[in-house]
Image (cartoon, rainbow, N blue to C red):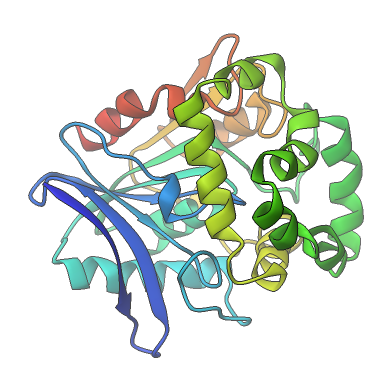
Length: 284
């Protein structure tokens, strides 16, 4: 059984940190966590080897101001080579979805399947903001016009999370979460894992967090969902106001053969409520 929080050195000298959980010979899933999450967000699942990776500047991975979503697969490929993994599945949650999509597109010979669980879809389309909570629906157009505003949004986050993680999370996300997600986060273990990962995600300061927002929300991702050819599974919560179901329906339309599941009465936490089933589907 592997339970390793470790790192590797990439070809350009950067450090890539990751958590490796599960059986060494089990089918691998490379998990891309969302914004304010990191390698500590990943969790084990029966019959799988779950590898959760810190993106540059997040958690313990070296920063890179020049990074893009489309460059991420190069890091993933080096990680897979280092671990001796020939083929693997890819999973993205929330703002991790662009990186999962890019990896599935760029490394398709090695990616057995793609999963998007409560993930964002591209914003350069009509009705992209339908179903979003009011605060995000108002903020995102402004951020897309002026990406520098991300620095204002993230400037105080590291200090807030170090001082009081629960209060910082509530200020950042809690006011916008639907009742179903509020209930899911009353589980002490679930809440502790989320807050611990958020604190770790901020350890290198606000600048990498601002870049995360710019890459995910304000700049082109550099990948077209319609170009993805690997088997794809999509999971969304019916009541999610961060990544509403219309995003899953758009990806289903764009990715040939994609299978969409919508969980009634659930929200953004559906990805973790159904974690075992999601991982099991990707490695089947």
